Image 1 (cartoon, each protein chain N blue to C red):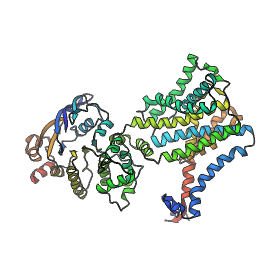
Image 2: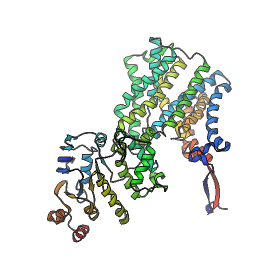
Image 3: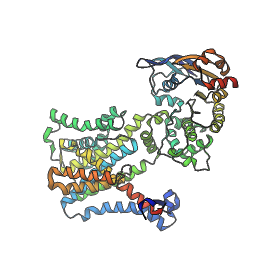
Image 4: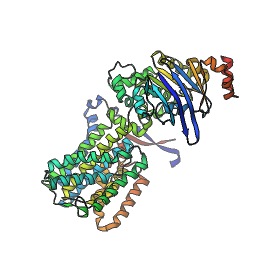
Length: 257
Length: 337
């Protein structure tokens, strides 16, 4: 579905990404892990057109999307969340969704559950919020985004993608900053998105939760692809241990796995 | 009670209409609460020309309204789209020159020149500003300030459109009543139109661009497109003001690119309260007459002006309209801590 070919990004003399290639298949949940600064977010930025690659090519459904502007790529259904949440702080939560629902893609598709027809944007927005875990009858969907806690903001990031009825969502650390119980309630949500036919790329530091949902994992280190495989294969790989050497969590996950 | 043991408590007034629903129709009191402030503004503006003592002050009213249009366009761009534009003088100049040229050389009547100058002028201004739209905040402000200065020098250097002499002998409005009521109605139209617009779905997109343009891009919308639509709307107002100005003074010249037209709307927005749209209009009704009263002081009036502005920034930085809205919607009382 998504084919990335030798993606390379240089910031000055530093290679943030060095010839990273991978494929993403329909229905996948591909986890991307790696130590800090290994180029995970840069990869997301490159795929979604927020930065232009130095070299390399990206194909979506066989079509070359290299170098297209960010809004065109989102319009094709390749959406992303931001690691640092970017809601519209001055608007209530449900009005946050009116904006993506105004986009050409949402008009064509009708939003997440919409069958090609878009109803009133406020109601569609509240429907999406409800499905993603905002209690409809509470005041939460009507609260200002600036007063929402992190857990809801992360969901709001996902909701913004869902408003476009996406084919791929690139999740940049949706679990980070959440409490254990919040993550526990996020995991079924991710699984539901997968059942809905949405393909996901998940960048995570929370390996245990990631390995529960991901069917494939790719490890980046210093901008290079280290290994790729099922979570078990990746964990067994000595190179990964080396890259994460000393990281307690890996040890923990390894004993857990 | 010493100041330290008490604090001011603010309570929303117990009026249901603030939740903007159908409750407004429940009682006369609620209805009046909603309608009165708007009515006062509308009727007040419409009565104004009738109560002005002299022709001179009637002319001042027209001036105020033209500045109010500019201030509206500044407030809309700055507080709803996130583009701080110092290009007010560009809008005025372009609108004025188009109206003047159409009237003088093509013989178009005033009924045609004003709408054509507004629309065509706005299109030209938008095209000119298009390359700067990726810029944000103060960078956009600097570049947009450059345009009127450049336009002035280009007309001077190339000696086009009458060069430094300008274009004279342009038709005036049929009567001073027509002139004043036209500009007043335009101000009201754009004021209430814009207030409606910013709460529509497309208005939310504009506000989204201001709040967080990356998220708008991630939602599959081109921010440059929405910024240019917003600039078009704002420059319609500016060019309309310019076209009216040229017909009021029956003259169009490089003085119309003067920085007054860029700066005064900002001052009015500061005084009136940014982001309220009505505030900048009120700000103009304070600043422009003051400026007329200070005319005798010559260039010293700029100094007075600066003092007034500074006083506002220091003592009432939120602006009159924000202050007024708060007083209108909330009780205040001192409570013991």
